[in-house]
Length: 197
Image 1 (cartoon, one colour):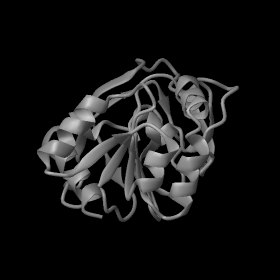
Image 2 (image 1 turned 90 degrees about the horizontal axis):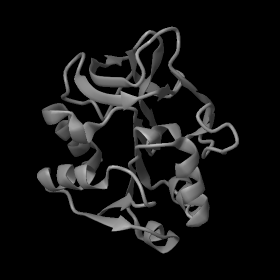
Image 3 (image 1 turned 135 degrees about the vertical axis):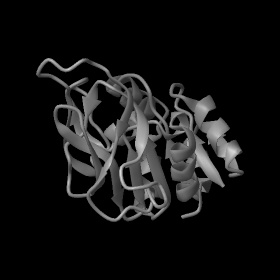
């Protein structure tokens, strides 16, 4: 059973529809007890880094989420759910991230159109279970104003004036900066790959 963490925001309906389309069983969880039952967790995210981290803290979900990840439960962060895995973000310098990866989230600059919105290609830079069967340079749908550094755990990057981590895979932790639930057949393949891990 895949547990979608509902912290009061995010693109839950699209994620639910995608999981239903691939025949995956799922439930929404809203508290620490729900997380403790989870065998797989998805943290979807749209919006503001600070609001997400405050919501996790207000609902007393931060520690439970970290405990489950450290216990080996498979985790998938989507968009802001990827950014939450880092130490901090320029979007909300006062907010602490989950700190599973070193570094901070930065805002696109240098005259780039923000947000980075629409279809863009991925460049694989390592083995990827999430991108298995997705082709050499899959096109996926992005909607982000901030980006993560291309950490050593990144298995694919995107280049939007700056190279950034688009897919991260480290042990039981998986994360994507793009929206697989809005990425057509490739997105379905990626979600199916996660569901079958």
